[in-house]
Length: 181
Length: 110
Image (tube, rainbow over all chains, first blue to last red; front, side, top):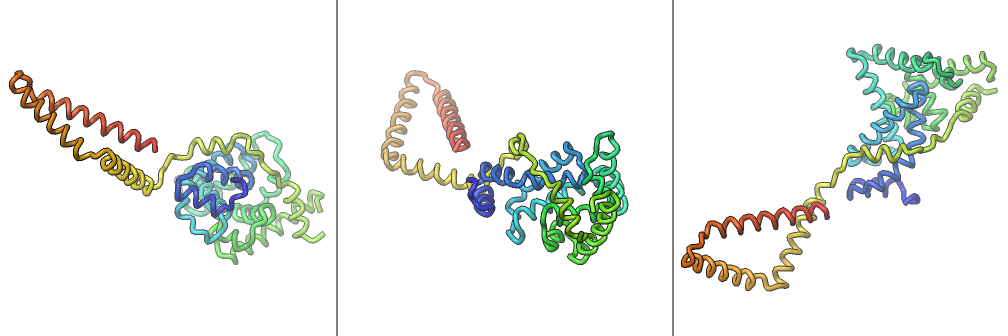
């Protein structure tokens, strides 16, 4: 089953309710998805794994709505991004964008201050705001195109480009100041 | 070094493959069991077709007729033997319910 394309596996899972086909998809995409969520949560393994699990469960229940307009991986990342923000909103009563962004940042830095040794990547990403962080992670680590990032984050391509540009500037400054350049 | 290259190099050097370590199995344990709606219809249709085929194959009408004749005779005989036909009806009803229940269980397994 390993050689089967995503489309074939999705068709089997949707039409026949084939769980083994879906299991293959989970195994195929668990690593990039968990890595993406790990970078969004500032390296919180437990939380990112819980969110990744919720993402796959949501993907299974909504599989019939996958229209093949984007790749399955991009669709999964979009669900993961929404699951992450749903989690953030569940922590805060207020739903304003500023509050949510503040909560994302606090969650990101909270893990940094819990006494664990934080890896340099999370320190570097910690310099960015949540949108810049997601854009930089998707573009430089997950090798996503700008159009795909816009699709995942449900933002206009222009906004993604400006987030990338600002994030790049901050990251470069941080890296050069810390002897990476 | 070019800024873009610097960031890409930094990020790619920290890009790790995360080993599954039971994650997929855990996810699959939490996936709700759902069968597509058409499968229920297909199961019912196949069951009906199988019953119809068996009915024709085993000459169901004559079997049914003989059952009714025997039943009628038994009831008529029971009148003379002071046998209460209500008991027979209860028995037939119970047996029917058991058979339907069994068919439902088999259909669920399919």
